[in-house]
Image (cartoon, rainbow, N blue to C red):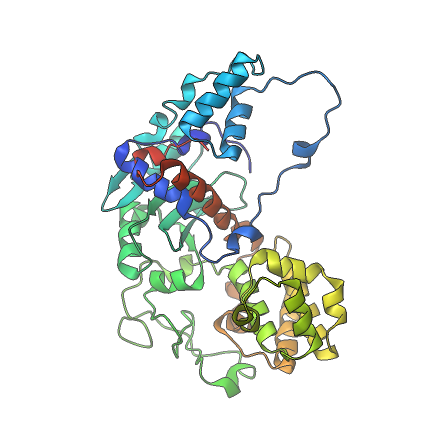
Length: 423
């Protein structure tokens, strides 16, 4: 991600009220699913790893020191101690100051507030201006997620060229319709109307849908999740005219327009691997090879196809796994890999429709049950944005790690200081 002046200070923003909330924001965003985080590892440019061509000592500038302190996840006192020692040993540039870490939150604290057990950004426009960023809501998406410890929201830049901006965080609020509605109200979502992304459970809250295994779980059409005989044969289902509470598994008034929803490519991928593994012969060579790859995973997770991003990537790279497959399994597996590379990432293959159609057919031959995630590929391919990599929630999952660092830093003392906390 490109560096933006002042972005590190964003994590120090605050007074006591917001420090408590923003802190919630930093430690809490560890991926809801164990591995979403891993799939969103931060990729750095080649220049970051360029070997040094001189043996002359390098004296870090203030911005380089800020990046180091952020990467180490140091508290304010830890940052002051490190800076003081390095300055004592004449290892820093002349512009480096120890004192900047004592009040590193103050520049952005004014844009955050803390109430109702939630730290939130009360002035998104002012925050963008302070960071030197232009706020075009069409260029940003709102990522909302939760973990076992917190509920949080962050703005992600489409294309991920700018850093993520934390908007709300709470360790007291659980993931439910009422709390998500309150979060949207506090960050003034009605004013900005960003596109929204998150896992399917969060999308159900945002659209007022009934959770769990329901008959009409798709928000775009009246797909019957229990009509197994029709799933692979019927592509076009009656469209939903509107999301009307009390009808067709809609419980409450939608919080966002369904047209503002971005389908999550990461969770689509995890859903595909889940159905693939569940269709395997558990006594067969392929499944046994998967068990050997992940000896620490429980039998229930293995048989349920519960994997995370890094584990799926590991499976895709292992040629030994593919050699263990039967012909039908291999065809389904190769189709899955083609969809991951040619549709769910940054590059969309010109023949992506044929690639997806081949996946659907090979999954049918393997005996995979059609889930909601496969249904979106089967019946609503045109609803996906042009570049899924640019709006992937994997970038949002990275924020879970940053939030986890912040929560450890403040150890539950939430207030507005969290908003401006420097990484």
